[in-house]
Length: 377
Ligand SMILES: Cc1cc2nc3c(=O)[nH]c(=O)nc-3n(C[C@H](O)[C@H](O)[C@H](O)COP(=O)(O)O)c2cc1C
Image 1: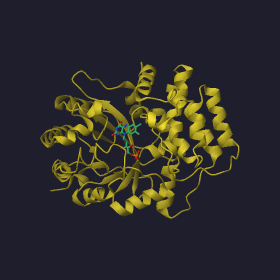
Image 2: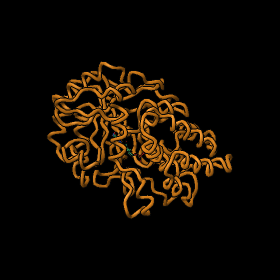
Image 3: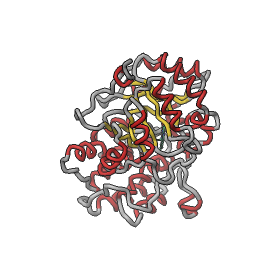
Image 4: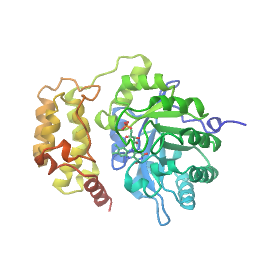
């Protein structure tokens, strides 16, 4: 019997023969506009949409759908779903398959408690029987590529190898594997050894995900895991040049460094994000800070930009901070790797990490979600 990988090979990469890259799906970030911004700095081989929520009364989110129907990047986009109701997952997968998608992706990794408590996202990793049923039904329903994005387990890795065997048994076409458990969230080291184990055990390609912070890190992760490619999330927000740099690194070409003035231009483009343009001024400042939290990790080792931008109350103050730090010495280089010790936690800033003044203006997940919902309504 042909392996699933043979039946639905991956779309050709930008550079043939090279390991592939993908922009990780990121809710409230990887929308149509952000995809076009990323593409302008050098596309990944593949994009993934934010997740479509699936439940008995769900319809396709129109805003997310636009990243498929109006995809301006010339690169394939996978449509990601999150849910646990099998008839509704099947219904949604069939609907999405009618659009120009590279494949249908199922989220089995989201670590947010409000998600996993409903047994969706990472919550599914606790229930092998349910995963078996979902994969069986979706494999029947999806005519083209059917991919999974997951973590290495929920609390521990006891289910890891049985999960891999289920993926293989159901002919999954691609696995994007974040090498942490759900309970590890974003903390601690990524278990690249387990990604290597998945590569060895599965017949489909695997994208290694988690802390691929630079072109050099991508090369190292590929060497450690033998994966078919890397999936990059937060580091693409910090450094949208990363996919071009990875291609350069893997071809043995010089990796072109980025000047701080170019970073300032990137921030200007984020300022033009349609979501940002449609919300009140104060919400716009919060919205931009979400991105700046990541970008700041490459600006200065002392974290002065990070601290000062967090304190800015108005857009004018925020951009004055940007100008001071990024245009003072415009030819200075943006760090290839995040500076150690600078934490970008825009969705989970805690009392421990911020002064009272900073706390008053930090972004919470709720405010971001509200912001996005307001912009979408
Ligand atoms: C803001 C944010 C939103 C995310 N949203 C999603 C999502 O919608 N679907 C998903 O599968 N993973 C989501 N993730 C997880 C990422 O896709 C990725 O697996 C994770 O960030 C680890 O990769 P990284 O270290 O390169 O960031 C999200 C992560 C972040 C930081």
